[in-house]
Amino acid sequence: MGLRGRKNLTDYRCFFVTTTCNNWKHLFINDKYYDLICSSLKFVCEKYDANLLGYVIMPNHIHLIIYFKNETKLSDLMRDFKKFTSVQIRKMLEEDGYLEILESLRENIKDKNQIFKVWNDRFDDVVIYNEEILKIKLQYLHQNPVRKEIVVNSEDYKYSSAKFYLSDTIHKTMLVHYKEYF
Image (cartoon, rainbow, N blue to C red; front, top):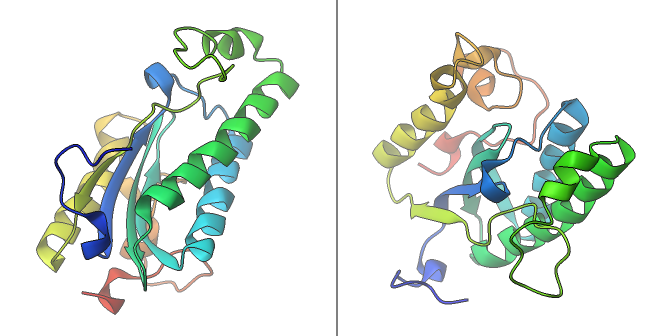
């Protein structure tokens, strides 16, 4: 897949990444869908020696801040994440009886080898090369559920790193504080 005029991503370590569900469909219906996304993120970050510095999982898209400790393999990480979660989400929708949503994922498929399309083909990424940009992106992703009027306070949204950063409580998490790198 081409870089669409971007610089070589392997020159950088930290990225703000956004990926969306096909046609912005709300596919993360309940906690088990969100838990799948979280466990899959944890797995691919471990596989590609990356740390998750921030995230928000919205009903139809996700924002991530990912830091690669060694070799940057953002495209590989996202490919594996989207491929695995696509299959699992399709299975979960089928098991849970969301056949109408499942059928809508068959529409407009260009690739004849693909039956369902859970994610949009590409993901967006922005290189984070200093703490100022990181804080701006972290604020943006934490405010997403507030802007969408899902919660009043960002730290009240369950599927976000906001509480991690706003709480004095140390708790077990898949996150690494950005201060370790910036």
